[in-house]
Image (cartoon, rainbow, N blue to C red; front, side, top):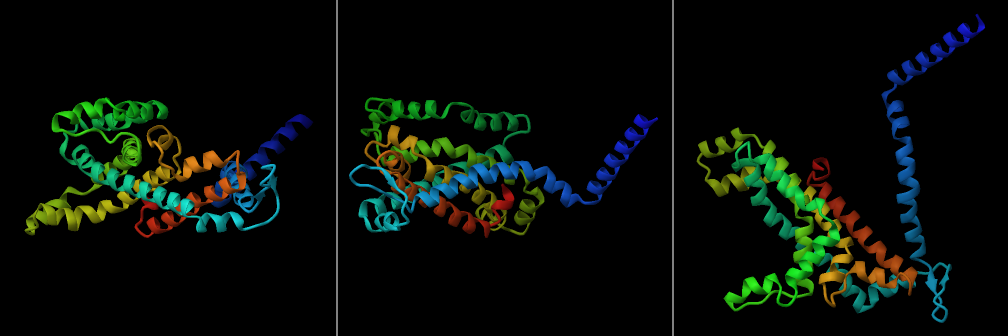
Length: 297
């Protein structure tokens, strides 16, 4: 009898708790997200906090040991030394160039896959776009190293025209990064074009607008948030990359490989350099927020 009463009481408690959670969806959502948000706060935000704090430390010039004394010398050196300024500007320029190239290449490809190709071919084309993402990052970069090397595929294809490949350097870095991150630009544009109502395009044509006017006044404004959403991926991934430039960049220095080379020599300076992409990406996200890109992710 006592066991039955205890079981009934336990079931009643569970029902009351379930009813309370059902009446309070915000509490239910909070409890559901508490564990992953705590994990995010401890690992991701905690590591960023350590990065920012260590950026204000210094290094003993004789022993190369980290001195945990608060100082702004690293940031002062970062923005007063011409080499560091050039590296920062070059890195942002590479990220913007990769983003622009991805947008120019992705738009016609996405338009074909979403609006021109037949229904039977669209899934296959999307799979073809996603296929490079299944390959290893290093395999793809080293494949481009072989293509761009002296006597490689690029030289072989351009030789009949009296030209040669770009070799290793800044153009090779931009070209390789464009190939790596292009699918991240194609997919959001493809989705936006696929959801574009056909009657809007037909109405524009009925009102006398030609192809370019329809594209500029109807298609582009509706797809622009998706282009901005894709640019968030291409810009941030390019700005933080450090492996590609080491493999195909030749003597080119970007933020990523400068940070990598300073980790053991001058950890606080590497941390100060590492804060630059974080700040730039935050500013970029705030700028893209005005275009509605975050809601298109």
